[in-house]
Length: 495
Image (tube, rainbow, N blue to C red; front, side, top):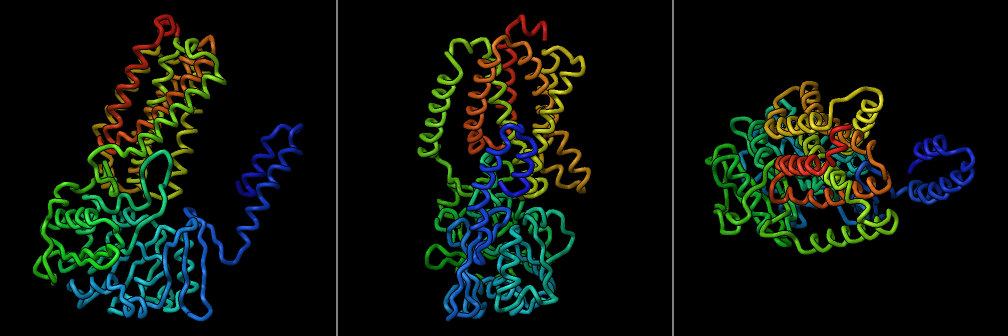
């Protein structure tokens, strides 16, 4: 909670408790100020970014994100000479004699930009999702790549930039775009999730010139992951890429628009591993999930969460048998969480996997919930059976209309269409919930069972690992169907 959050908290706090609230805010702000005022600590929308420099090695800076080593800012010449061959391989494998336009996604602190400039790039669009890391590069990178007039900085989601640009590039680079965190606990979307799907690589091919080329490099850590990405490139371009691997699972995957233009040391061939893991899509962008079963650690963790939830609700909410008449509210809660998860994934694809988009989804959900409650309070709404039928129609429409179809629309039509598809089912579902909750004779038991349902729904989001996000709508429809079936007949008639 920052200063603005504390001010809002104090305004909303009861005047009798304001002194205690001030004490809590001070207790929170003091350690936050101690961290924020340090010269080597910066706060980005995604990370706590810490930097370490060595006075004896000018131009070198270690960048840590949330306490984990993330980037080493160093002179471009040193990065190549000391053996990090991933930086130089794209320029030796691909037709890069005339680099009029280059796109670098994951430009970070600027080393990749400096190397591209050294290889003759005339114009570079440098894209990174984290503004703080890019600013550190602008201020401290000894090669000063971001001061070069040939370079244009863009703070944006890489997939969103690819989707919205009309430029054609001679070279597109994915330069170590690997985040350290999920964008939200309500989905399995990482910052880079939609960069490595079949559809993303097709977008890359679309923005290349006729003689253009693409490369991605990283510390991939797993051989099967290298095969998955190489297979994705082959699927998008129609021929095998060049794959160069080095120590510590470093790899460079390079591919030209035309196979005859690339110069591979040894041609990549699809291995049994590549066939086994396959590629990922926008509907199931789980690059790091190999498949083959549900991870045991996840299963144990989710089971523990469910047990703790049920025990807590039993202690605080009373006997579970008293909650039986509100079984329909349990399924409404589970369905609502699945719907929210699906909307986060949809908006991340449509508008970028950024903190701002994520905040918009949650704010939108809260506003729609409030609007539904006020609608039910102020106006006469249709019977429950009509509302549930409308929910089914809205979910069916959202399932049929694939999010990727909307990507072809310009921003405002895409926003309107995406908002209607995402939030209409939530609005209708909350009208149904408000009608049903109003009729409950034991609000504590009704709310308790609904709360357990939301936790179960949060666990069910992992179905997307196997079904994809779009089919979560089918599970949501089934849950709302069960909810309608379990509504007490008397409540159904009066609501």
